[in-house]
Each structure stands twice: as C-alpha cells, then as structure tokens.
Image (cartoon, rainbow, N blue to C red; front, side, top):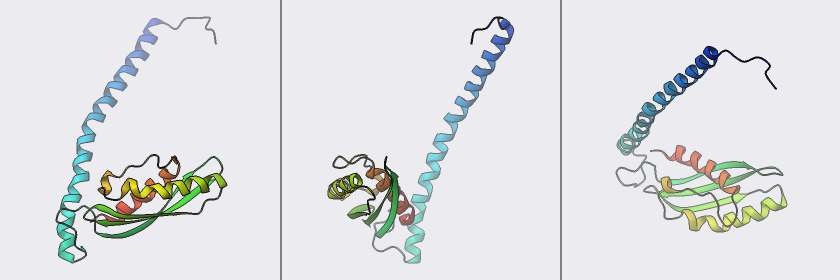
Length: 163
C-alpha cells in the first residue's frame, strides 16, 4: 500500500522508543529465569535417592542415581505425511544406564513399516550402555521421524523412573 500522507516524525519516534523499551524489558527477564530453572531441576534429583532407599523401593542402584532401576514401557507417537504412527518403547535401567531397549511398532503405511523396521534394527547400538540422560537420537538407520516417537516415549519413561 502506498501512503499519500507521511506519518508525523514524533509518532514514528514514539513507536520506535516503545519497541526498543519492550525488547530491553523482555531481554532482562530472560537472563534471570534460566539459572533458577536449572537449580530447580537438579535439586529433586539429588534428594530423591535417599528417600527411595529409605522406603526400600530402590532395587540396587548406586547412591546418587536419578532413576530407579527397572524395566519401563511407554508409547510415543509421531506424524508422517500419510498418518500418525506409534511406537512402543521398553527400556531397562541399571544405575541410570540403559542396559536393554526394545521398540515395537504398528505401522499404518507401507513406507512407515520400512522406516520403523530400520529404526528398530539400529536403535540398540545407539542407546544401550549410555546414561539415560545422555540418550539423544535424531536419526537412526535413515529414519528420522520414528526417533520423534522414541524420544516422546523416553521422556515418559524418565518421568516414571525418576527416583
């Protein structure tokens, strides 16, 4: 759209000033919340094992573990261009380390069947032997969308296993 009349200079300057002040105010807020959030996340992990050991629910994990040993199962879904797919993930944890992983799928599309099969064939090499907090998969054996469902299931498992 072409303006036929100019906006007065004081109005333009006032608008610019309001925009700059708004950005400065928001930038100041962002810097102060991040360290507090990090501190809150680490506090429960350090205090949880002592209460777990006191109740007898710990099954042999080392002192200081963030997760209770055991086998956990969860589902994670992800979207493909053709459909919404789901994978079921079963992970065994020992002292916060993944000792076994099993992924099963029920693909709705033929292409999803291929990619889920490739993912299932390669996921064990990517996660077994790693600390559960260090597990991060984005692409396994050429499958990138299936890893989204795996990651969602892993987050659920970590929530359930938190000591």
